[in-house]
Length: 485
Image (tube, rainbow, N blue to C red; front, top):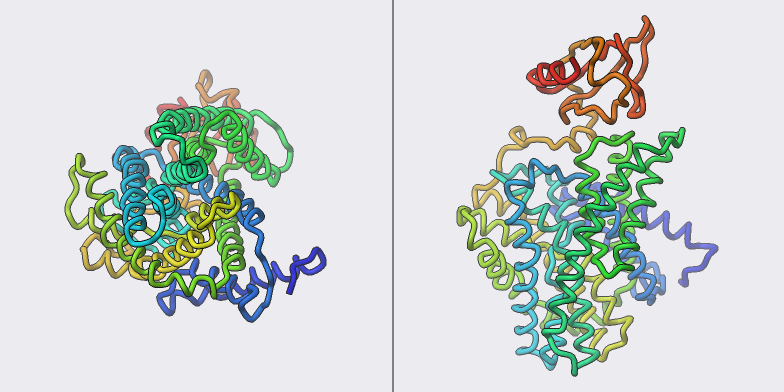
């Protein structure tokens, strides 16, 4: 079956519906949800029961880039600065040095056991060098894993921030494969330039986005998520246009905004949580459609060897060397080594050699597909069991919910108190979004002249207003009262 304008909506909606149903029941059998999405795409493809012919790497790459923007930005919104601050340098080390070491280990191994040149081997290593944010975020959340110490923030920070490094290495080694006369050393200045520009642009666009969101008056709450989507894509494309790493900028912009007071922030977070899931499903479905299973079968032997080295050798070496300067128990290092899931991101990166038209592009794509499939199946389905074996898991009842988790769960606050705004208060004339209210508290209602007002982010506080404060921590009341009075 060919995809046409007339049937694309019907096919797409049916595949989406089937994927959601498959994902709902997948964990009864211990299978990661994302693997089911991929399987649905393969079954619907040209060699599956659906018979849909799809051989468009450029379209798949475009869908992948769009989806990764949503996934990384949503992951950034969910990242709390207080949670990642203690593990910031560990995460940075894993997402840079760890990715480089993984790429080198796999690249040299592939060079030794195949007829790849060294640069072709390193290109393969670069493509599968990063853990997949979509896989890690979704599996950790859906399995509701409660991990000891700072393991979860470390894993989520690494998976959310290491795609830019893998992307750079992929583009750099692809360029060296296509231009053998160029020196390896020529890519080093480009790397630092991309990272520096990407970092500065991420925080700069984050600050600008905050001002735009809070200052603009759209009139309709539903337009704010649309505004944020436009700002997200502006961040990516503008950063890429000036020579920076767009994926890094998008993630950092999300982190910045996730830790600021924004108008209709809860609405934005809920919307992006749903969009991130939609993008994950669409991405895995598309990649499932793109692959031809008959072309994957011949590379199973090489794929199994590379997957084994990646999981049991390259990833542990990368983790241990990246964390050598940090204090951490052996079992926690081992668990971080195990949570090195590969997923859709390496498959998206594998489309770059296809589009460039290099000689071994199809072979690289099929190997990457098999390795990613193996990683999600083996590592993704065993995260809870391995956490239990290494004794790094906690009972679900002891899991601390992040502020975003509480927003998504609509968790009610447990303490309530009224605070009256006196004459001369710092809050008078300010909008609620501009008040420095602790993240664990909300202003639920305002009483003004015997009238009740449902506050919004742009509601201006007036003298003698009575604010009804809901909070999860009673100690917040004293802090808020001192600030407002």
